[in-house]
Image (cartoon, helix red, strand yellow):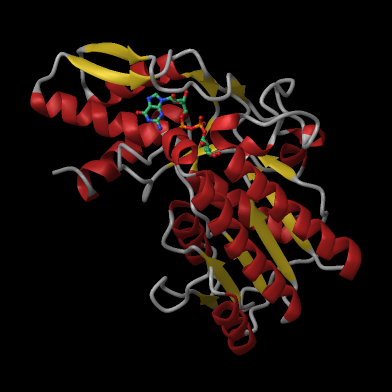
Amino acid sequence: MQIMDKSDKIFVAGHRGMVGSAVMRRLKTQAFSNVVTRERAQLDLTNESAVAKFFEQERPHIVLAAAAKVGGIKANNDYPVEFLVENLRIQNNVIRSAYENGVRKLLFLGSSCIYPKFAPQPILESTLLSGPLEPTNEAYAIAKIAGIKLCQAFSREYGANFISAMPTNLYGPNDNFDLETSHVLAALLRKAHEAKTRNDRKLVVWGTGKPRREFLHVDDLAAACLLLLEKYDSPEIINVGCGEDISIGELAELICQVVGFDGQLAWDTTKPDGTPRKLLDVSKIRALGWRPAITLQDGIKATYDWFVANFAQ
Ligand code: GFB
């Protein structure tokens, strides 16, 4: 077991994103004093030589690999080339340079979409690569699986302490609220807010509303990331979720209630449902003593407040 020192140099890749910014907040409250970041304009993580040079100069002790091209079901389905190529480049550059520059520990973030479309629920870590993937996010999932396998290869071949966590569907401050590329929770918050503002009587939700998803507030994930960096030293992947799921229809109703939109829901079934259910088995991380602290209702309220303060017109 390897305990982090508060003065360890920690590189957060992707610190402006929803996950990276939550990790930054958490590192600050936990008094980690030596955090390194780079803006995208200063360091292009898809550029192999630029990443190598950055690692040679900075030589961080710990790396949190939270940089990725991410998006909701539509973006994933429409742009498989970009999701595959960009994510492979970023993770190959970061993981390899981390090893070559003596990084003591690296945490790679995957996604629950790496599991087979029809994996038994709740999904055990051991079901990875036991069946076909959900087609709408296959490219992203393949990239993430390659990242996991690269961390495991560095661990097996060279003894690196590179671990991988699989978060469930995330939401929270700094989420993407663009309706074409966002995930469902952010999209529905924005749609409900705008429908309320315009006094619409109808809110259009994609798909049938039947798929079930598990939602975790990103601040809970950030706490899990720090715990894993401090306590988890196995190359075996580990799930991070709240252990409960909800249908998209129920989520839409909850969001309308929080936002105060009292019109009707309408279903656009020309849009894909995606995987029918994605609920993680979280026994492994629970055994390490981690529990999420934010209920879905409270998390949605807090995210709506953030959206109103930072995004809404
Ligand atoms: O969050 P989401 O885009 O991603 O969609 P996935 C979840 C469900 O919500 C799908 C429905 O059944 C959507 O059809 N949905 C309803 C909507 N209304 C909307 C809407 O306005 N916007 C969006 N985006 N969805 C993603 C993967 O899958 O999950 C990624 O594509 C990633 O690879 C991420 O892993 C966590 O849960 O289906």
